[in-house]
Length: 232
Image 1: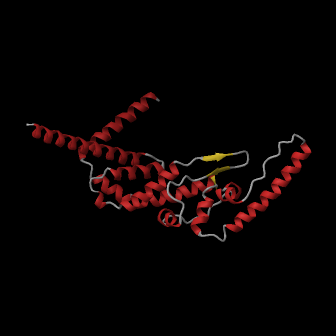
Image 2: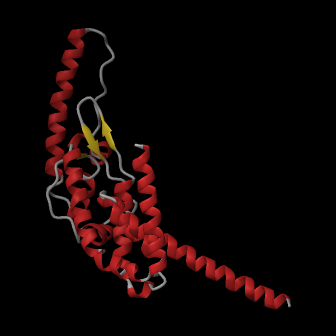
Image 3: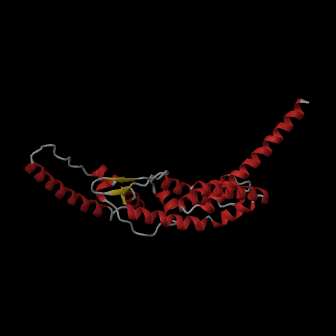
């Protein structure tokens, strides 16, 4: 009797788990369709793939690449100072030649603008002149001019240095201090590529969802939209 009960409980839990995974998968696919944010769209498809019951039919290598790069962008924030607004991309994988070839080479083509003085490379290799605390206007101006002259020299050195290093090293240095505009370009490059690569994956995932689950979520989404519109 206890064995029969154990078998029944195990079977019930498997059924529930299967239903929950299908609902989560459906929810993520609907989210990928409704959102107008490319990173969210990409992330939702990748997450839905994790719940697939037919993983062998999916290009999981591409899914994982898209997911890791997407998470890197989603974890990134811009830094604003009095002079600059720059972005250090929070890559979640090692900044190596192997990672560059796996995660970046397939989609990156466009040259990017960056702030040499804000790069991690500058902080590691070239010292920074501190601001002068002396309140004398003359001393402050003199010191500022020396700082500006020194920074111009360092900027030129960094740009010259990066002409001599490997492509992967240069890329990771540049993406440690991107202009905000170049960051947007880089993000657009990736999402355009990723969504094209994931289109077949999304189609296969959609076929795994039963008509009833699609119907339930479609009706639920419609009701939520109506409630939102009524409250606005």
